[in-house]
Every structure is written in C-alpha cells, then in structure tokens.
Image 1 (cartoon, rainbow, N blue to C red):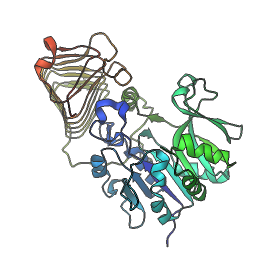
Image 2: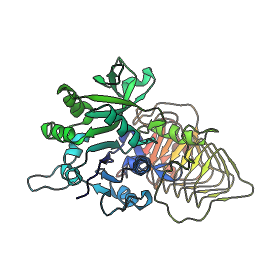
Image 3: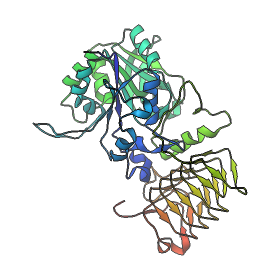
Image 4: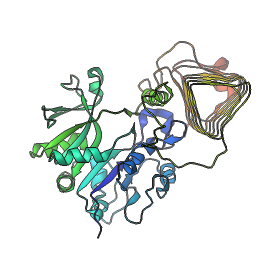
Length: 422
C-alpha cells in the first residue's frame, strides 16, 4: 500500500459566533472573502501548493454550503484516487454517537481515517485563517529539529497577546511553557493553531486523553505531550496571517487586499489561491459610474460609485449609489441613490433605494456589544432593507425587514433587527 509522508487534518466545523449574523446560516470557513473566495480556500490552496495532497476536512456546524463548495476537491487538484480531499462529519458509532466537542476530540474521532494512510506526520490546520504558508518548509524545520511536535507561532503586538495562546521558548526555539490567553503575557509568540505532529506521538496522546471533556490541542494535548518530556519546537512564521474571527479583523483583512502595495497579495502567480468558480459573465461598469481602489467580482453591474470596497460576484449597484469602505458579497442588490459607508453585507441581500447606511455617532450595540463594534453595519444573508431608511453604526440586521420596523425611518446606532428563526 502507498504510504503518505504527511496528511493534513483541516478543522472546519466552527460556528464562528463572533461573526454574528454572517454565520447564522453557514460555517465560518464558508464565509466569502476577497470578492471571489471562501475563507477555507486559503488553507486548502496552501496544502496543494505545499505538496500536501491528502486532506481530511472536519465539518460540523451548518456544513451544507461548505460541502457543496469543496465537492470532490477539483479546483484545488485534490480529486485523487488515493488521498485527495475527504469531508469528515461526525457520525454514529455502534456504541454511541457524539458531536465533535473540541479540536482534539474531533481529530480523535477520525483516528481510522489517519490510520488508513499511516503517515509519518500529521498537519493540523484551522479553517478560518487568511495566510499563505509553505507547509513543506515547516516540515523540514520539524525534521531538522528532531521535534515530536512543531507548532507555528506568530509574533503579535504584546498588548494584543492576551487574546492568544502564548508560548515561551528558549533561544533554540524549544517550547518551555504555555499560557492560554494570559492576562500578563510573558511572550508575544502566539500559537497559530497550526501543528505538525510525528504520527506515533499524536496517536498516543489522543488515545491517552480521549476521555477529557472537550479535549483541545492548545489546552490539553500539547501540554500533556510537554509534561511527558517530548520535544516541542516553535516554528516562527514571518508572512501575513490573520485570524478573521471578529467582524473587525474580517473587515480589515478584506481591506488589506486593496492597498496600493497589498500586505496580502492575491495576484502572485507562484502561489495561487484556488476556488470553486461559477461560470459568470465579465463585470460591467457603466459610463457615469466611478470605481476607485476596489475589487469587483465577475458578473457584477456597477451603475453607481464604489470606493475602497470589496464587491463580490453578481452584485448590482444602482445608479447614484455610493459605496465606501464596505464589503458586499455575492448576488446582493443595492438600490439607486443608496449611500453605504463601512458595512458588511452578506450574500443575496436586497437593499432598497435612497437608504443611508453607517451614519451618525457610534454607540455600543445593545444586543451584543462584543460582536457588533468597530463602527460597522452588518447585514446577514437574504435580508431585505426597505427604501428610504437610515441605519446607524454598530448595527446588525437579519431577515426581511419592513419600514415599520424602523421608527421614524431610522435604525439608530447600536440597535439591531434580528428576526425570529434567523
């Protein structure tokens, strides 16, 4: 039987609750990004660009659209007879049936899949980060360090370090200690949630920790392996990396694409990002419209003005509309004379005419201030916004809304309209 040197296990089952209404109907890795892609396209493209041709994708929360997008893996050249991409949802076993309860528990429940390939190394990835990384270079580092586990780290500003799992290393990069979201961090080396395990070490740890509730790599498996005296090394990654776990970081990562010299470049021929693409006509930009420093997806029709924005495919922007600093996803329709500033509008949304969005003073969101902040307006998919309404900042809308839900034609800053069942 052919043996695989390294296989990847891609964790894509998360709800992404900090993205609010954007993930009410789909898993975070299936959220659109950059006018053309889904978030999961980035780790999948990294795999095939790095020569990793066997990827198990672990799905759980609202998997339908993610499964449809991945299909048999053809866009990423992962439609293979041996290996390729395999979607791994939780399944019923003869003794019991359980959901994935933690990152390591999800991997443990798929031991059989990994044993089938009997790899030398297993690469664990998250499905919700935007970055380009050559995993082969990380594997070379793992081998040359004679490590049992290598975890990718990223130097974050020390004032932000308390948001991450932090590792403390010696001068050779060998991990000495861990701090999970520490109040007073001793280091700014954040774990990226990207791990390479030597397979026997991973298998042994998963079996030993199988009864730990909500077993997690950062909290349980890695400290357990460390306590056993195994060698854990930190691979310091220097490229662009963004965890798009919040609306603010998601908005910023999209905006990074349109800088004059983009911090994250989608146009490099040697490291392409692959995706499932629909057969769409080219974009159309009308004679009296204006597009400045923006990305416009295929099949979109622009009759108004677009500035510093990311527009998905099949979007229609009406005459006289002004879109600034915004992300508008596939198949949304924006009415004529509408003005939108600093909004994230999900797929298949209909915004009426003469709407003003993202105006007034900032106020904390009354419904979920920890989610709806950054001065953004966030509109969930298939929502309808009527004509002639004004919407403030730090607001959230999902569902088919009508004029009478906007008192005096206004949704004030910090307010939300979340329709039941959405």
